[in-house]
Amino acid sequence: MTRHEERGDTGGRVGRRARALKTAGLALAGALVLGTGAAGWAYWHLDHNIRGVDINSALGDDRPARAVITPAAPAPAAASPLPTGSLNILVLGSDSREGAADKELGGGDSSGARSDTAMVVHVDAGRTKATVVSIPRDTLVTRPSCPLASGGATAVSYGAMFNSAYAVGGPVCAVKTVESLTGVRMDHYLEVDFSGFARLVDALGGVDVTTGQDIDDDKSRLHLKAGAHHLDGKQALALARTRHGIGDGSDLGRIGLQQTLVKALLERMSGAGLLTDPARLYQVADAVTAGLTTDTGLDSLGELMSLGRSLAGLTADRVRTVTMPVVTAPSDPNRVIPEEPAAGALWASLR
Image (cartoon, rainbow, N blue to C red):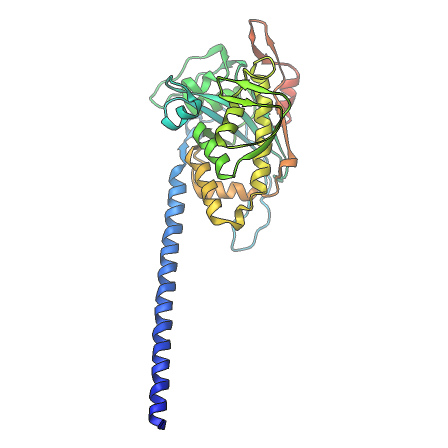
């Protein structure tokens, strides 16, 4: 073989290698473009899942004072500082009865929606501890006059069922009623509907709970023997809704099950390895945001992510669950009213 032929062969190999590298480079560039596009679409999709309600504008200044804000935690120069002040969030589980998915999960056939579950989540300054206070939906309260989106306002109602506030005035009236009842300013509002909760549990692969007694409730479609159970989304939702198959059939027995589920969800989320599994993280994020309504301070994916990062040190064992102290209402043995002074002292501790 001549030197010229050898150079030609080498040149051919180099040429083929160059073309192969160019092809690989184009493929990588295409993958990056597609990946960036997919990530952009995913962010847009999750962001547009969230529905926001401008509660602050609707309620104005006639509200309890905000808690004193502590300085933000130090952060690298390139990052925004994370807030560390205490926080009060009203979390509602809405008993929607209009969507097909919610009806399939037990929402019923009637129209409208109710706040089936109500919890005030108080996060301590530093955001490493929290107290979750459940408010029985059967509590009789003075429901204040609430502004309506269509104009005008609802009338003040004395001795009204607590969960009627959401039914007559939506999130705005729910927040105003809670603030009137507690004297505590709600910094944020989060509402999750039936189908959103069930999807979240399924995206996490189910939750593990232990029941202390048999549950046999045809209305919530739940039948469980006492003991440990791994529940899917539909079963977990039924557990959150059941009341007739436990205790005296009141809302107080159901609240205990709901608080058990809160702890189980926190434990599942912390142990699910979401940060190392992007596909599963997206499924969970999609489930969370799909059935979510918030105040306008949390109605974007960026704002929710910032809140989540600020709560990174909050683990299930640092969350305390309690129920607002109540006694039987003198006017109705099937209703309750706040027990004073214990209820007032509890709310004062969260201000």
